[in-house]
Image (cartoon, rainbow, N blue to C red):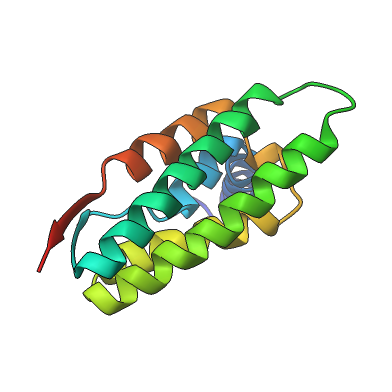
Length: 141
């Protein structure tokens, strides 16, 4: 590679990286899906987790339902608020359980739901979040 080609290739690489980061698929990588999906919790945390997981799941389904529907911002906004609230609850439970992967996932999900960037809420991403949420395994201490 000659020096005259280097800047052009660098600029091209930066442009491709920028396009990739603008793509909703890049958001999938940034959610931080947990590798360790197991939580060991007490009985009180178990019932709280189950309620939050169900509410979060329902909110994700609502978000999918209103995808691309004009005039349904109230329903979408309520779903995003429910995602944020319940992700925070599960984040607290994961902290007490000592699972940093789930803590990171829920913290990122909470931020994602309040970001205001509708392009990052592609149906494919919402479905992957839903699958990861339902994949969390909880055991009682």
